[in-house]
Length: 332
Image 1 (cartoon, rainbow, N blue to C red):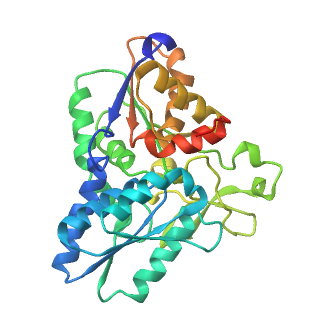
Image 2: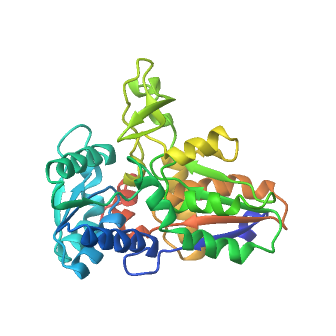
């Protein structure tokens, strides 16, 4: 891909080859299951959108002997069936969220309701840097190994430009870690790719009212997609992991500080990037980082050839093949 774009050198920070399939997810689940056991909890509740967080948490819950329940956002259920099947194989209960638009936001709503109703014996494991304190800090800090590895590899290189995909607009997990760790050097620049706010193909609907304003969602004050009167607007993305209208609170702070620039990618651009990486590198990415890859493909040709782009390639594309096939008009 570097040769094809004829610009900056592109490095992929890939965590897609482990069983769960990302050891960052396993870290979140493992440490928090330790917390749950220490606190005397006997049950795990979690939300899951694309299913990666669900598979990792179900894996660790099975190892600890905890019954686990997952609130699933079924807006793309058929496309995510491999991860649903994995969770159930691991002994977890998987329930569809039936309220609202059945997206990640609604799954979090339902998981929070379950947690509050069963707080005596239940521990809630949130997978993103969203929700009430201390969840954003926990998700970030428990995965610092990823940022440490990336910074160590590029500590002696100049003109490093980390580019990260950002599920939940910017409620990304490892991306928050890398931003903080790379901030010790003035040679680094940061960008994050997100789904459009609002998605351009929806501009003819009422969703074009959406603006990013400060607000409170799921116990955190951050930037949200809202109407002028303050009502949260449903997000849209071809990727289930991006169907969330909020912004991670630390990302909101980084934006206000001018440390990070955020860009958008349409469904079409993400699909094109998905296909390009598959054909050129033999790597089938998840649709979430495909949004970041779309931005890489825009900027790399305009950068000097001695520049370096580091892109976080989280997740695997096997969970997205049904969605991509449907979008491309293929029959499986």
